[in-house]
Amino acid sequence: MNPFKSRLSAIPEGAAVLFFIQIFATLGFAVLYSTLVLYSTKHLRLGVKEATTLMGVFGAFNYGLHLFGGYLGGRFLSNRNLFVGGMGLQVIGCACIAIGSLASFYVGLALFLTGSGLNVTCINMMLTQRFTSDDPRREGAFLWNYAGMNVGFFVGFTVAGYFQGTQSYSSLFIFATLGNFVAIIIASLSWKTLADRNTPLLEARPKQFRLRLLAGIGILLGTVPVVWILLQQPDMTETLIKAICALVALTLIYLTVRHRDRRERRNMTAYLILTLGSLMFWSLYQMAPNGLMLFAVHNVNLMVGKVEIQPQWIQNINTVVIVVGGPLLAALFTRLRGRGWTIDIPKQFATSLILMALGFLILPIGIQLAGGAAKSAFVWLFVSYILQSIGELLISPIGYAMIGKLAPKQYQGIMMGSWMLVTGLASLFAGDFSGMIPEPTGTSLVASNLQYAKLFGALGAGSLVVGIALIALIPFLRKLITDRPEIAPEELPTAAGPAGVVA
Image (cartoon, rainbow, N blue to C red; front, top):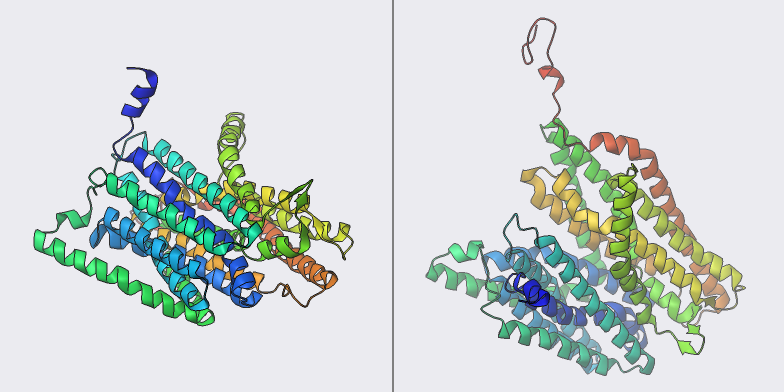
């Protein structure tokens, strides 16, 4: 057997199929994620505030429904059923948006969000089920899956930029429809291969299985009108989601204060502090398809030589940095740690916030150098995206791994859920920040440049302050984060007797 066939035979059944499914499943989301604000303002003629709020709610729903998808797939619908059902909703949703009316847009968005929000978790669940708990190939399979997702983003962003140049939004959403449909075809052809393994649903008796299946279909379809109603009132929905996030935060604080194990309580405290830093980072990061996109369209000279850079193509800066920079950064860290450098969670979080701050603080410099009455050079936005993407490499990969390290076993579910909820909350804050930018029409370039410079400067300064605060807290956080069990004061040995005996 040649080395290539030998390597293929070592891949668990279904893992390679999921790689290709991931590529096509990502296409629709990449198109909508990078185009939603532009489509809302240019085609549907929504105001900047309304469009950016809608984009914030879009992100919040997407990440929030990921949690519900994991529960629904494992207990009511199988993960492959939910995935195909969710992709079906995405296909119909993209087709509705392609019609071009405001009414069909909201219907299509509700269908698409329900599908994408629920089925993303299914791919991860189907992939992880292909491996035993101690299988060393699991990490490599998820890296390949992550690469497939980024291939989907790259293609989606590139095609979206092409159609953006001609304002052919209908053709763009038809492309997204076809791309998502290919994912359904691949899944259908590999139906037996993708069968669920070791889920609570499989333990149900035949009658219970059928009842759960029917209930799952009802929940899936019933979620669509709920999302549609909430999309009609984005301001109310934003307030509701923020209130839920505040309630989750208070619950975590209560659980931390009341937790009896001192070592685990200290780890949970570190988690809460680092979560605040994460919220700041992602709130600025998720302005990329929102406020930064509008800034690029109206206030940046997108001509590089004789080529006009389409706004969606700018998102590919991040994709390339992640794919190329990830392995390079991992190798660099291994080398530095081998030389005795301390590169741990607190330092990586702090550095990511400093990089995010620099990414925003250089934008006012570009505006100033352009003279105030002219568009900024593209290079400033390019460097900003590079800095933000390097920051993402420092904070994103370790986020979920951090939860496994810091969360007590009984709280891992709620802490993982709250970590994902932070990203959704950050989408809302990104929408709030983006809503502060000027309307593209009726505002002079001088005035809009001034407002952008103030906004980016303030956001960059805020990230810088939080980053410096985390730097100052690094010694404290390192003391909190420990794997060594602590002995409570009342358990310490005394002069009169052994440990646990009070003299």
